[in-house]
Every structure is written in C-alpha cells, then in structure tokens.
Length: 213
Length: 295
Image 1 (spheres, rainbow over the protein chains, first blue to last red):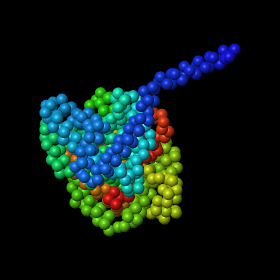
Image 2 (cartoon, rainbow over the protein chains, first blue to last red):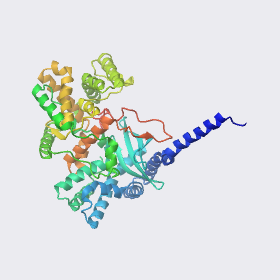
Image 3 (cartoon, one colour):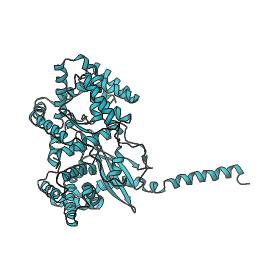
Image 4 (cartoon, each protein chain N blue to C red):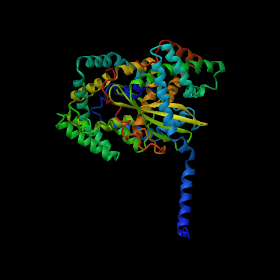
C-alpha cells in the first residue's frame, strides 16, 4: 500500500483544515498587500508628478486634483461631512458644495503630498477590518523634518479590485470625522443652509486658509 | 487630517492644570457626577468611529455629546481670550528668549516630576512594562539626568509616555460622559475632568508644594507646551469654520486614540506584513515629544 489508512485520514483532515482556513479569508488574502502597495504607489506617483511640475503651482494643482479624484472617495466624503443635511439640499447646492469641498481637499492635502518628497514614508502594516472585509487600514509612518515620526492611517475601500482612499487618520485624527463634526455644528447654527457653508468655504479657499503653513 | 493638526490637542494643555489643592468637597461632587453621567454613556473605539464615518455601521453622524454647549462655548471663549492676551504672548516670549536646550530641559524636568502620577496610572491599568519603564526613567533621569533636566533614559530606550486617570477610567470601561470645557484647563469631559482631580490627589507634590509653587509649576509647564504649538494653533484657527466645534472633535478623537493606542482588537494583520505598530506610538503625543514645530 502506498499510504497507510492513518496517513490518508490525517492527509484528508489536513486538507480540510487547510481549505477551511483558506475559505475563511479568501478575499482578504487576495487584497492583502495590495492596499499597502496601493498607498505606496499613490504616494510615489504623487511625489513624482508634483516634483516634475517644477514649482509650477497651477500645474501642480491640476495634477493633484486629478490624483485626488482618481484615488480618493471625494464625493462620498463630501456627502458624509454634510451628514443629515445632505437630503434636504437641492441638487444644485450639492454640486456647488462638492466642487468647493474638492478645492478644500486639494488645498489641504497637496502640500502634504508635496512634503512626502523630502520625508521618509514607510508602510508598516496592513490591517483588515474584521467586520467589514472591503476595508483595510494601511499603517504608514512618515518621518518628520523635526526628527520624530508621525503615524498616518489610510482607510482603504476595495471595490471590484480597485482601491480608493476612504479616509485618512493622522495621529488619531480622522479627516471625515473632523470635517463632519465641524460642518454639522456650522449648519446647525445656520438653519441647515448648505449654501452658506459653501460660500464660507469658497471664501476661505480663496484666502488660502486651508493650506498648512 | 494633516500631520501637524493631529499632533497635539493643544488647547487641553494650554493653561496647565491649576488643580493643585482640591477640596474633598469638590472631589465628592465630581465623583457623583462621574457616577451619574459618566458611567451611563458609551465608549467608542477609533474603528467604531470609522465605521460610522464610512457609513458602514448604519449611523450617519458622530454625536457631539455636548448637552451644555452654550455654557461650554462661553468658557471656551473665555479661555481663548486668556490665551490670546496672556499665554500666547508669554509662550512666544519664552520661545524667543530661551534657547532650545533650556526649553527641552524645562520639559524634561516637568515630565520627570510627573512620574509618580504616570506610574500610578500605569499600575492601575496593569501595564507592567510601562510601569517598569516609568520607574527606570525616573531613577535614571533623577540621578544621571541631573534632577530630571536631561532625558538620559530616552537614549537608553526608555521612551517617555503619558498616562492619566481619565485614561485609566476608560480602560475600566467608564464612558466619557458629556463634553466639558473647563476654565483655564480647556477641553475635557466628565470622566477626564474627574481624572484630573484624582491625578492631582495621586501626585505627591500636591501635598509638598506651597500654593505658589504649585501654580508656578503648572504655569511654566503650560507655557512650555504652548510654546511648542504656536503655529499649530494658528493653523487650526485659520482653517476652521467653527473653532469650538473643531477643537471639540479633535479632543475627542485624540483621547480615543490615546486610550486604545489606535489599534482595534478586532483587527487582524493582512498576510504579508508581520508587525503591528509599536504599542505606544500614538501615546504621549498630547504633550509633544518632538522639538518645536516651527524649527
């Protein structure tokens, strides 16, 4: 006999155990390093494009805007930060808000990606969300010019094999939650008028208020 | 959010903690408030908030949990006025006059004399390794580090971390209670406010220092912390459309992150990568560990 009965049984149970393990997290394994790779590539791509713009601010902004729209859930984030007021807002006002909100994000994040050119940036771990398999958290550490590192977490959503940044959390502070609580407070005190919020944000964008100095 | 923004919740430390001599009466009152409201509320992990943030948990908004907002806003405005007229200029002057080495020694000294409180909370949380680290730091820095003026222990691999009774309560499962802005002390909540009182009772210096010395200690510590955040506070003020709401949100998120160390128990590592971030890395940031941002 080629295999003893015992060997066959243990072989089969090993196969069952292995398949149970594999079946338990098939998608997760496939998505595994990919979310981390996605973040690394996004950062490399941004740095390369921004550096190649050679200080041409308009070109930089144009390039970053394309990157942002292609890799961040801009509309979804925009909807979220308006919260319950979204439903009561007209299509026209929604569109106007989303457009200004995109400007806010460009102004806020372009300088950060710009800085990545001179900073160390390492993906340290990719964590799976146990409850929501489409989400991963990419843990990155960014070397600061001051010497100490900052932890930046990227919440990545996978949809049909493509990855999008759903939220960014630096040192525990989430983009979505911070903007939402602030906008909600403003809207509550301004009878839920998204138009007013849009106007105020537009003024601030014009003044360059969102760019970290 | 951006890196600098997340770095500190400045305002909470703007004015330092003037809780040097707390009467038993105030403590009892706070303990009752804590029991009534603190325990009744819920505590959320960072990823629970994230689940809300991406809408996958069904809820669409993170609650403000701020039933006394009107009063809080009033106190907040008062604190801001004190900051603008007193602490901000004092901090700018402090930073201008003293060289970085001296300012770092001020911070080292302040951290060293806080060691007993940190140690007590390490122990109360069952964090034995951190307790050992705090103890080593205290002995090394007090002796070789010349009464704590130099952080020699850090070079030996014993990194500073902060700990307070508010966090200890949170690890026991106490909810945060509602949001509270304390005069001079800044953003807090019922749990952390009570934590401040307990921390001051845990601090041997509370019983040793005279009132003047205690206030001097807090004031210097506040000015030092504030001096490391001048640009950051300006940034936050400039880019927020509701400064009060922004700070409230930042405070809550930072505390959540400190309490859970930014790692959820439910999470598991994606295959291919082998290490979780160091347990400690999101802690100790309330008081900045880096050199001043402006330099």
